[in-house]
Image (cartoon, helix red, strand yellow):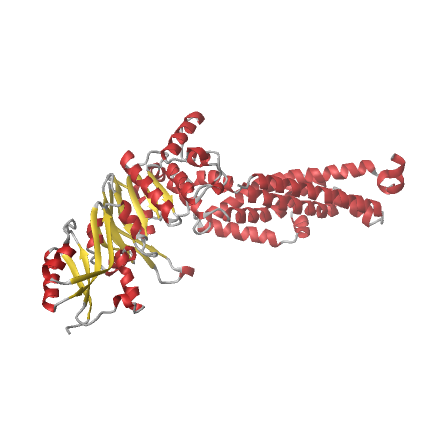
Length: 226
Length: 348
């Protein structure tokens, strides 16, 4: 067996520990950045929803400012964001390289995207439900948690799935500027040194990861659709 | 007691255009405790906006909303939320939460209870609206009528004193509408709850309301007990509503189609006889026929029970000597029958 893999994937098998470390780094980036993106994006998405004109806590100024900021960060190419946020990253995380150094740009890159996804997920909530909840004496805060979020589990799960997957793409890009991870591993060996087996294995692992996330997301969304 | 005084509500037109929409114009209304009060109007008349001013889902631009003497527009948010718990509301589209079961939907407004208490309360409510067997169903598995029953149970969860019904039967078929209206009537009797019914269907008002207001382009054009409005409509819009429910409206169709049924021969006269306040236990038609020697041919008839009183009318073709016909018409008029000559073929 060992022999078989050694012959089939000679370059990879020689760098197996490095490969596992790279995979671990990718998981680490994904998990940390993903957690921040989920929490901050969810909060921003909710604020955008309730403060927009006609929302349950209409606040024109807050909405306009937030709306513009989200647009701004969505339009900056991620590779520029990576270098532009280096000083901020050093300030917050103490470094601008390796996994720690790339969390900040990843969060800035993916959060506005996720916030918009949440906003459009919440926008699907039937206005009648909001009205019914108001008529039953629910406060705006209660409506956020007991109607908007509770009734949007399925669409928010779908939004989360899409964001996790696109975040995976961003981590690969971050790898190119010193963050490590699978993307970096594939570029350094598979691409730069033309080690085809490494490129293939990395791609297969990423496809498997994407499929798993997508399957899990669909499963949860389906469980929550009645 | 609900007291609305000089309620005005305007909406901004689309895209910040200058033309405001005057949804409700200076409306005053009083609804007594325990009443079933109807607000009828065609769509766009402002009735939905007006009813939302009662629980302040819409905040009126001007005017006062008093419920049991408490001025609703001056309440702090927290007090307003508590006040709303005592005003149930049901909707045309039911507005049940799709991700919650029937039991969870009805439990939504319940607070400050243990789980067991909540379940007991929900089961009591579900049996009150006769849908106990569906507690673990999701709304998508229910029919329209069942959904509305669940919505009613949910609206009643906090023992409200008032129930607002916004076109609650408009999405239902006639049979289900009848059943839901009967349920509302029973609840009114059993719980003494005040019910405000918004509808564009005269049938609904006739069926369950004692008192009603007719709304047209933001104003209340007629108000009073349903029997008076129905039997003696003063405003053109009201008359249109009354006509929509009456069989006698078919006459216009027959005349338009030039049906042989309404073709008059020489000497004949066609009239609409509307009984108002009348004691129709008297056999007016056969009496008139014998007494004045005229033949009476009934083309259409429509008699109904409105608010416990008989109301109705017939379309009749008179045949006979002209002075006899005249005498018969006078006789009807003297018996408080509203006589309207529709067509007269003249004397021989």
